[in-house]
Length: 575
Image (tube, rainbow, N blue to C red; front, side):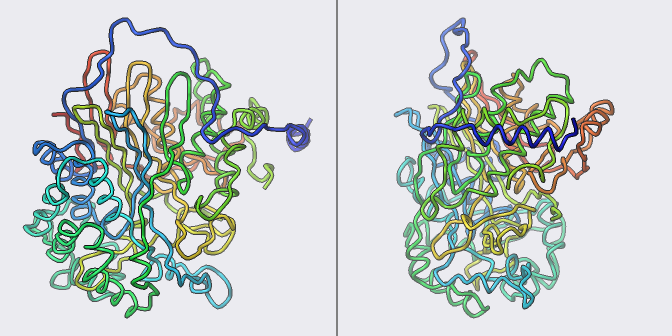
């Protein structure tokens, strides 16, 4: 029987399989586990932080030393990354956070994702022939959503921190004012984006002092951003979304052809949402709900994989099974997901183990499923233009934050003398339905732009609580974030250390294009040959992702922190 006919039979059978409605977060039942041999620690007694830059990690410990907790440290790390890693995140962008509050044993998701301005018009992102205008979507003020990071950090400090906001922001303000030596990746980013930075006077003034990128080893200062953070430290939300900063932001954006208003800024709110909780083989995975697509996609993948014993498979069949689960999750990602405040999504179906049962039955044991055969353009580099950090403090509070300005140096547009580099998150909307964005992801009406709407994200900050070990995990990487975090969690479940998890080689599939992205060395020659025989196209990529992981072994009460070796400037530190 040929493959096409086999698939028609499988899909016909699935069409008649009803999936009962389950509440959001419903998953397959966890496997039973043996009780621990000794009492497990209830609090670590010390702290661990892993971030993409040593200055940010040290800023977090500086705030902990002042008596702060993990949430105060998160404010310090995020704001410092805004100064020292602007190519990936910052005050003009947004973030998503998964939090664990130890005192109340409560899990929280904080949504500080950017929103579309009220005057958004999809026609602004089209060329005269109706094709996507990539420049409008990725460069300049039209590409920027209303930033969420300042509101999110203020919310974090106000509701969960111990210290005054000014104490937690002090390291970032000091480093921006006094200066630091940019790492090679920031210098390369500025050089790579120099032509676009030169289009905007304030961008050139900030990133190209004297008309050229900063020299290696030279001290670089950002006094304008320092002053903006000082206003936030003094006035909270109002220091950014109202008053002097707001007026300067709107004036700069509108002068350059953008459409922000003071009302857009004044109306922005960070939001707490119920996280998605996944049970996988006795491990409780707490992760991101929409407007992140990460949690839903990972729930689908883990629910599908729960019906297989990966440990008994050879590497080729293990990868085959995982890739087919990825393929089906990304198909649903493209079709259904968006901002829950604007779109009704079939989450009960997507998160149901019965739905996963049907998807599992459609996986052939020895053949790839062409994406074109599942009901329902060329990809760009998966990218590393986001950042993630992980924190556990001495009391067991946990923070997983993924923060972004989207692409390299965001929109490359700095808003006047505020020092605020704006994001280019408007490209994460389906600006033109069923046309790929910069990460090759497709979208539907569910992710179409509307005023005040949050664009869909792949950010997947996660906390994993097992029978004896806990992990805080996340990574940048555009559409690969979901598969990176999923693979990292699988490795954690298999018993790997933090350093092993961040160092593991990676592979990725996102439905379309129908290829498996592979990092050099991820498969041996025999596995690659077998996957190709099964029908897979393997596409080599440069290394991607900058994962940062903290683990807590509750048997020995030891913490471990590791930063991805793909970025030497990162630092995982236990203290």
